[in-house]
Image (cartoon, helix red, strand yellow):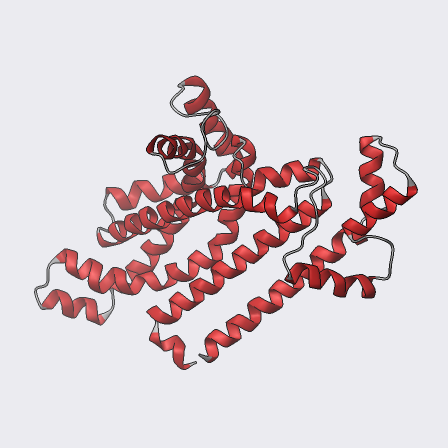
Length: 325
C-alpha cells in the first residue's frame, strides 16, 4: 500500500507540474495569443470584443497569481474554454470526438507490438543461436531505427498509392455513419491497418530484444534446471517457468513506452489524416487555437500518467516483493 501511495503522490505532482507549465507557456511567449490570432486572420474587432476574447483565453493581462487559481478551478471542473478554430464548440467536446480514435490506434498498436514482440523474444531466447535469434532481431532493430513519420509515409506510398491495398486517409470511408454495424467496423479496421503497422514495426524490435535478454538470464536460474530435471515438457518449462518470470520487466516497459507510442501515434495521425488527437493538435497549432492546444496537451499528459499508474498497480499484483517495500 505504501508503494502505491508513493507512486500516486508522484503522479499527482507530475500532473500539477504539467498543469502549471500549460498555464505558463502561452504567457511566456512574446506578445499575446489574441494579437497573434488577429494579425494572422487580418480581422478587425472592437476593443470590447478583443477584451472578451482575452477573457475567454485567460490572458486578460492580470497578474499571474490572480489568474492561476482561476485557471486551476477551470481545469479541475473540466472547463477548458471554447475552441477558436471550431467556434463555438467547447474544447472538451472537440477532444471527446478525437480522443477515441487516438486510443484505438495506440491501444491496437501497443497490444500487437507487446504480444508479438514478447513471443518472438521468448522463442529466440529458448532457441538461442537459431535462425529466429540470428536474423530477426537485427532486421527489426534496423526497421525500428526509422522515424515513425518516415515509415508511415513509405507504407502509405507503397501499399496505399502504388498497390492500392489500403485506404489513404481518415478513419473510415466518406458517407459512412459511425455505428456498431459490421460494415462500419470492417471499414474502420481497414483504415487502421497502415497506421498501426507503422507504429508496430518501429516498436516491436525493442520488445523482442528486451524479452530475449531477460529470458536468457531467466533460463540460467536453478528453478529452470530443476523443472527440466523433473521431465516437464519443453513448452511448459518455457512458458510457465521461464516466460512467466521474464515478463515482469516487460510490464514496467509498457509504462515507459506509452509516451513513445503516444508520440508515434500523433505523428502517424498527421501522415494518414487520421482524425485523432495528433491530427487535431496540428490543426490547432496552425490555427493558433490556444484553448484547444492547452486542452490537448493536458489530455495527452493525463492519459500517459494514468496509464503508467495502472501499470504500477498491475506490477504490484504480479510481483509480491514490491508490496513489502
